[in-house]
Amino acid sequence: MSSHDPVLTAALIAARCEPQINGLTRQIVAEQRSSIPDAAALPSSMLDVEMASTVRHGLRLFLRFVQGKVPSDRDMRLFRERAAQRMAEGVPLATMLGAYLIAYRAMWRALCAVTLPGEEHGLSRLGEMIFLTLEQTTTAVSEAYLQGTLRAERGEALRAVAGALLAGQEADDVAARHGVSLEPGYRVLALVLPSSEHPVAVRRRLHAAQAALDRFAGQAVLTWFGPEGGHALLPLRLSFPAPQLARHLADGGIPIHVGVSVAERRAGIPAAARQSTRIAEIARTSGRPQSLYELRDVLLDFHLSAPGASGAELSGLLDVLDAVHIETLEAYYATDFDRRATARALNVHPNTVDNRLTRISTLLAADLRTARGIMLIGTALTARRLASRG
Image (cartoon, rainbow, N blue to C red; front, side):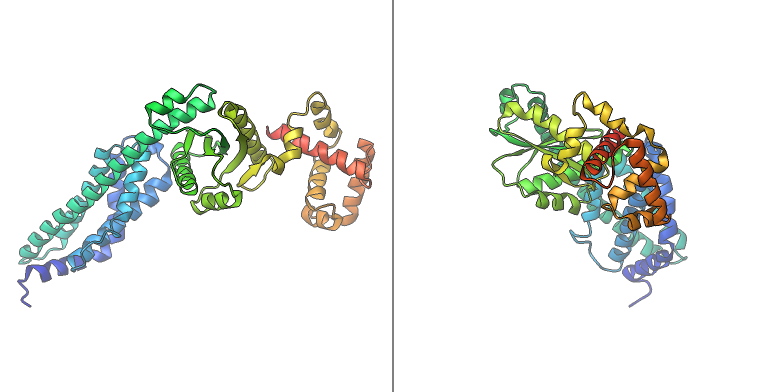
């Protein structure tokens, strides 16, 4: 094959750029970041990891294309996924397409820099191939973005219906206007997220939760989400294997506390929403793993979190104890009353644990060697924990 063959020469030029991919990626990401409005407000995981992986994927895809490998639909999947994410995060389509143009422009400059005299015919071929891949990429990105926009519009309609139901309003007209069929009763799920998360991370997590709920139900689920979580309404006619839904959420990478309550009739949805929220909050503040919880799973804590006039008295029962005593009690109950395991957890001698437990029993006038003492002090410990974390 002649050295003047543009296909061969283009491949040779591209091969010289391969060792530069990582450095070129860093350069492109830095330029892309400066082109995104309010980039400083976005999480570093999006800017430094996702953008870099997308750029690197695009560069390698182009270099493989130059070597004769035509990009497949699977090759374009990452671009489509990123487009859907950016749409959900509120990044304008023009901004996103501009980021792709920055990448291809930088790729062209790198190709020009390694082109030797007499290889202009190969560079001309590379220019044509850049336009071809740019067309394919921007088409895939634009289509995915617009599809996401349509889904978002449908989501807003479902949100409007869910909001009316959760507020206890008459929702028939709203549902009819948006083409939503209402159910007689719903299982109300409250999704609680850590309040310290970045808003973009929260939106992503809730978007993933919506997708997991839709897959579980086999239909679009009515949801109303805010900055720290929200509610989902699952029709009661659907079977509800809670472990299966928990797996759906876990498989989607959604660490979240979910409280579950039942509204047999639509009028009961607001009360069920309040109860499910309280269940989820109790599960979170009491240190339980991120999963699904029903009332029976947190029954004692639920009762103690609002027990009436005795609540303050019960939670204040341990005020006479110091921090060391409280720490010892927490460890003693966490190890199921195993004094040696308690000692190991506290890194002290078992005799020290015995002395502390004796002192605690004396101060509280409740013997930890009796069933009554164990129940009273354990209940007070739980009430104190709920009061301090609430």
